[in-house]
Image (tube, rainbow, N blue to C red):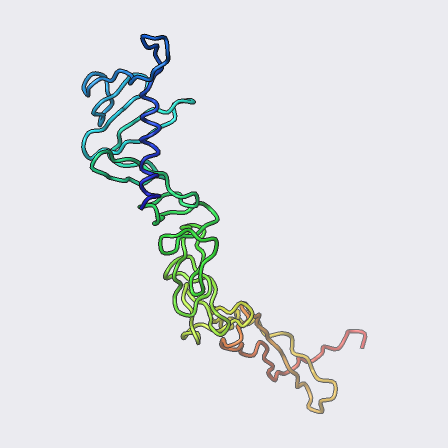
Length: 260
């Protein structure tokens, strides 16, 4: 409680020092006097109750937060309806002020509750941590510890897994013990991959009828036709049908030459 009070007092003390100016007293010694302030409506910014040209806002209207902004090397008071990023509002009966968040917080709700972290840190239960506890993954995009789906080791959101545990297969951001119909497990990638069935092209025309050398049948031979494999099957895809056919045929009778 004492620390919180001191933090509240720091902006107010700086603000008070800015209001003081040195002057000569009757006996020639230096004395501190308050600088002249103007009431709201005579050149003050919106939200100011009183202000001065040199120091800006000196006090705020109800429900506004007093905040010190740097203007070059000088600090000027301003009154805001909400505190800027990296600060949280602390209300009190006398003066409501903007207090700077902790060093590791990019923005915060209060002294002990961060709402966003700086790069390299991840939000977990209002704290900015350098790493996430078991069961959660460090989401660099959101800068927070994200709860992954069941069986997931690494994810980019609650329903988008990028790596499953060792005994499960990844499919569409989810982890599966077995792959559904139409998919098959890839044990190298540990993913469910679409099954690929064999696809073949059209048959070629029948080739020339060729007589076998060892055949005893006169003018009997064989002719062949083939077709190409367009897509080879995956491990559990439909296998390829035969890609060549042979049938019996009759060879043409050789014509005798005229010299004979």
